[in-house]
Length: 105
Image 1: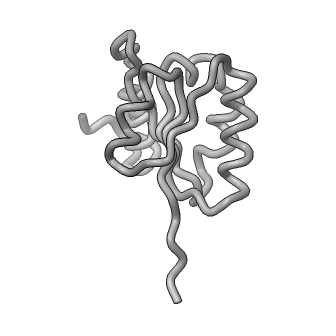
Image 2: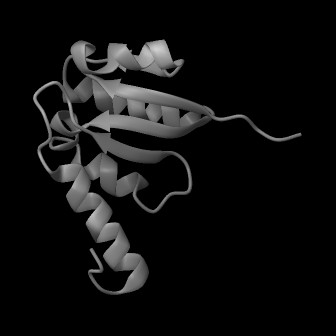
Image 3: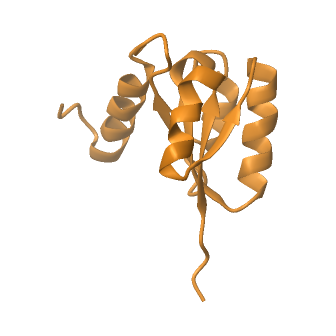
């Protein structure tokens, strides 16, 4: 039987609650310490994808490095209510460069 993984969204309340309407598990946090704890807990559970706001990701470099090469969970950065900080795009570009060996974007 196949394992079903959940999709979670971690960020400030205003940024994540809209995702609840799509059926995603939302985890509103108020600071990066709560986000770090929440991500660690989700990684232990059956969570396949964690969407994380860029605002929190800017403060969670070690956490992102810990999971960047892990198969599960995939942590994908999304803009928060403040708009895009460009961190998500940079991470995708670096991942492509690691996979292909050059910048193709």
